[in-house]
Structures are given as C-alpha cells and as structure tokens.
Image (cartoon, rainbow, N blue to C red; front, side, top):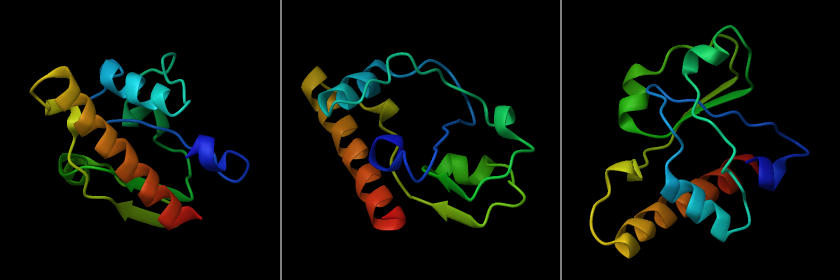
Length: 113
C-alpha cells in the first residue's frame, strides 16, 4: 500500500499473534523492489485507540479475533490464505508467498485506486 499509494495513504500492519517477519515475505517483496527487511511484527494492541480510515483483515483467524477499531470508516475483510503454513520445496513455498503477495496487491489496487 505504501509503495503504491504512499502519497495518498499511510498503511500500518499488525497481527493478532505478532512474531518475526517471515523470511519468505521479505524475499518475495524484495523481488518487486520493496524492502521490508527492517520491518517488525507488531501487535494490534500497538494501534488500539487510534483512528483509521480503513481497517483490513486478511485471513479468517484475524477476522474472528480482530478487535473493533472505533471510528474506522471502512472495515474490509479479504479472504486470503495465510502463506506461513506453506510446505514443500523452497520454490513451492516461494510460489505460494508470491501468489499471496500478488493477491494483496490486486486487492489494494481494486479497492483504493
């Protein structure tokens, strides 16, 4: 979102169960020129009390556990399979991460363009 529309929007990312940023995510984003290697995984609690124009949840478990963000004008749910459970060869796992990356980009363009 920030690389596509950084002049119009400012995106934040958080999870219901923060951990480290997945190395496969770092790699597939780097393939398209976006460096997320210095990003950190943040808890939703970090952003509680802040107002957002849009709140997007991107997987089923997040939809079920996502807290309410009062004041959000738009609440969107994108049913995307979490790639972190992918298995197989390194290339098969990368393919799954690429697919999710591309799905997110398509959703961003289709929703916020």
